[in-house]
Length: 161
Ligand SMILES: [Cu+2]
Image (cartoon, rainbow, N blue to C red; front, side, top):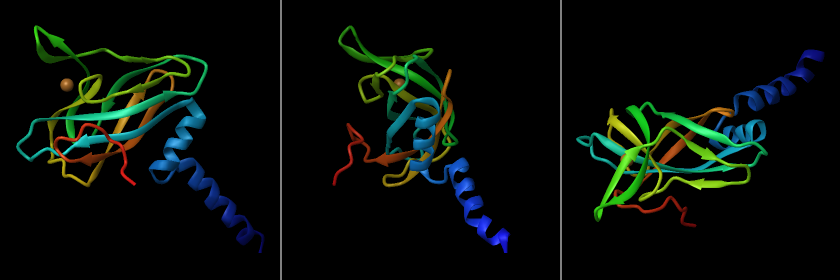
């Protein structure tokens, strides 16, 4: 039965190309495009909240610069890339068009710095849960990650072991 011998190979090929599971898709993305997106996290938001922040680490392991140009997630009507800055002693923020990631560079999107703003939340972000988010790069294309929801005042996505 040649076909039965062939089955495990078919299955392996299927798993490789679909990248089942978050880790698999991250690895696949990194291998294909040299852009790695890691440690995506957010903060718990009540059902009444209209906006939320999302944070990630982006690493360019290639030899060419790439640009994060947009972000999307089913939990928000739209997502913007924001930067935070001090203006007359007040913490303010404004949208930016893109984020350039130079070769070998690691960019942290974090509270008080560059971040992703989820505008028009369509659901409550519950601590301990996760939701999908897609980062769109000029060269690497779409990279989908799962965003872990931390407590409301969390300042980092660091995993506690
Ligand atoms: Cu913002």
